[in-house]
Image (tube, rainbow, N blue to C red):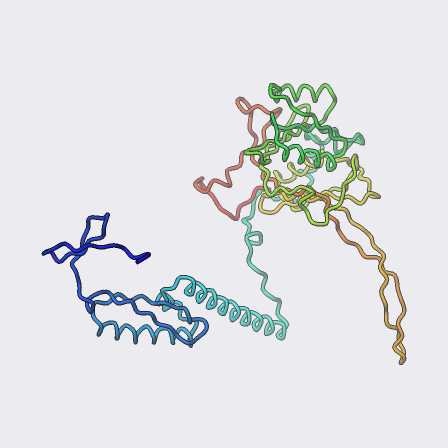
Length: 399
């Protein structure tokens, strides 16, 4: 018949062999063959639970049938018995049972937590703070305060003091790797609306980075940004400050262009957005913060209501580009009185509209001077991602 394997008997040997394999096994009687036991319950959860019990004897199968029935009934009555779930041989039903038991445990844990919080409120005690990786961050000796006099004195003479202290707008030259894809080209075009007075120049295949830097110096640019890609996806960003450096290398991830953001707006070209730098707490973090600040004008155009944000969390720099909008809405307010009348009032509400693009940066290296991978002097290199390095700690951050 269809779907049934063809067998042949070997005369005088008592063997049954499967065609094509050449291996045989002793022929067994019907009572001694493996018995397939299908146990079902009337419960909806276990209606299609199949338990396979190979047994050579009918007496052992009957005992195992009774045992499995008791196990399944116990699972129905007591869903917390995870150690007995393996008795259910159907993989899908076993997974559903495990998920159901874990969900019940989470619900019970949540009820206990609410009871503890309610008891603490009644006693007037503060609620415990949740333990997160950020709250358990190890203390770093390089933590600085916002008004530390030593840090402020060093920042008056660093590479970015002239740009941040002057009134002249910065000038940024943006380019890509040779033969960029359409995704990289679209990303750089959107960055032009983020950084004011930026210029995008397409790079030829034979143009070296040193030639790009020399051209930027001749044109009076204050920084060069190079966007790299891999497998037609943006994966790196290099920022070179002119004329004396430093050079910063970032890894780019989680990139989404404006067209991929729901309800996005259109950014204005040559606009000075307001800048928000959040959670840069160490000496190195303040240096990175000042490096990014030097790409924006010190006097933003507040009437355009555009905001660029760099938020540092666990050494990842999350970039967002928004516009805040004021809207007038009319609402009905009940007036005091027995008649229950209502009058209309106009209220001003504020909301944010994302402009894009959005991406995440991860600092890789800081090099003194202009970019030189062969003979450059590296000020800092990222070793936090290497779990095999000495002193690795996932709760230690450098920014």
